[in-house]
Length: 273
Image 1 (cartoon, rainbow, N blue to C red):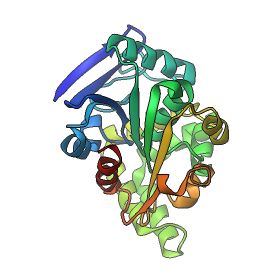
Image 2: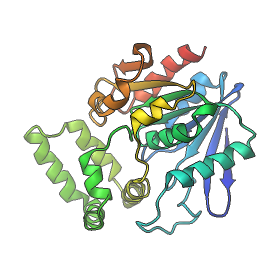
Image 3: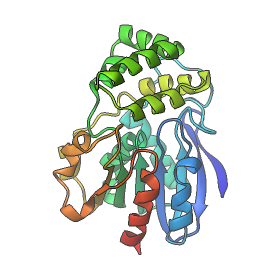
Image 4: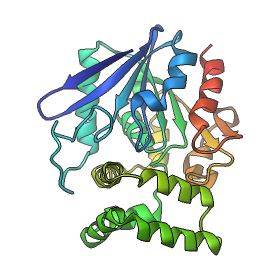
């Protein structure tokens, strides 16, 4: 496994190079993870088929902010143009012409942005509980308006209030207890709170017209993996995409959010073998 930096002075990311297979796979992890922690199972199962470039997305792992430092304001935004330039630079530096992509949860936004721009170069896209197919009203409220962005930051800095409110919602059946456990884990320390705040705000412009993306695909096969017991991202949240896919490219797996990547890796192995 290699940890590598690439990028210009304005745009830079770290990635982990895993496996040694002849095909190329770019992967994008979920919030609070790194490329290595999220896609370790891919390295173990798919390393003979792929050379895997597992990115640490901005504010995660070894990657810093958009400009290569720790500075941040809510005006620091990853646009589709910004991301396209970054991936173009990466592909050129590594002499990559064709590749596959895989993404989990938050990484779905980056996979969709890559798919939208580079589909003529992509053979397969493996989307695992992908964010970005639809947008939760809470995310819209927390990220798109200046007053609510400030309120969101305050709430993250006062997690006890958020947890107490969540417990009340759970008692009346509005949210599932697994969501509370996830929230408690994500807000366990101030650094994690800041990662959530920065990610939600910086990635908010990665929005997609799923039907339009699907229509422009040039031979790319999209595979969608959803956990039957996933309370964070449910089948209804990706219906805009699932209804467009052939039946054999949509998988509803006996898994929750936390173990879905490993379950999907087993099936991807069968697809690429």
